[in-house]
Amino acid sequence: MASEPAGAPLPERLLAVATRLFAEKGFEATSVQEIVESAGVTKGAMYHYFASKDDLLYEIYHRLLMMQTRRLEQFADGKGSAAERLRDAAVDVIDTSFLHLDELTVFFRSMHLLTKEKRKTVRAERRHYHERFRALVEEGQAAGIFRGDVPADIVVQFFFGTVHQLSTWYHPNGPLATHEVSEHYVSLLLDGLQPRPARAGHDDQVKTAETVETLGAS
Image (cartoon, rainbow, N blue to C red):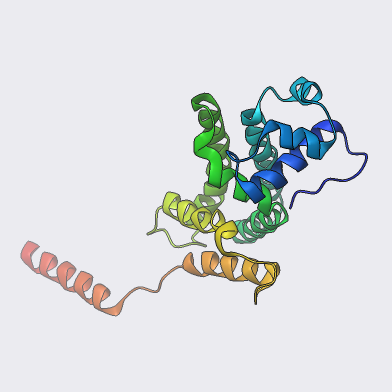
C-alpha cells in the first residue's frame, strides 16, 4: 500500500498522498487543495510535476503496471519450464498487487474518469502485459504441458479478472494471509491448465466412426 516516507522526492510524496486520499475518499471527492496540504507543498509545486488530478491518477497505475511488466519480463525470459515460469509470474503479480492494494483500488474504481487518451494509453500498456503472460500459456500448450482445448485468451482474462478484484473483498484482518490467497489463486490457475485425460466414451465413438469408415471403403 502507498506510504509517505519522510524525505521522499516531491513527486513520490505527492503520489503517495494522492493514492491514500483517493483510496479513502474517492478520486472525485478529493480536491487538489487536500492533496497539497497533506503533502505539505503548494499547488504551484504540484503543478510543476503534475498538471492535474488526472495526471496523478494515471501515474498511480502506470507506475504499478510498468513495475509489474518489468518483473514479468524477467520471469518470462528466465530459466525453467513454461509451467514454472508461469507460476512465478502469477505469484509475483498477486504479491505486488497486495503490496500496492491502494493503487489497485484507486485505479479500478476510477479508471473511467481518465481522459480518453489516457484510457487508451493504459489499455495499451495493460494489453502488452497480458500478451506477454498469454505467451507463457501458449508456450506451455505448444509443449503439451497445459491443456490445449481452452484458448489462452480465456485463461488470461479469467486469471486477471480475479486478480483485479482483490481490492474489492480482501481485508488484512480477515482469515486469510496474502500468501495463502496467492497460493489458492495460482493453484486454481495451474490446476485448471492440467491436460485432461481422454474420455472413454469419446474414444469409443472415435473408434466406432473409424471402423464404419473403414468398412464403407472396403
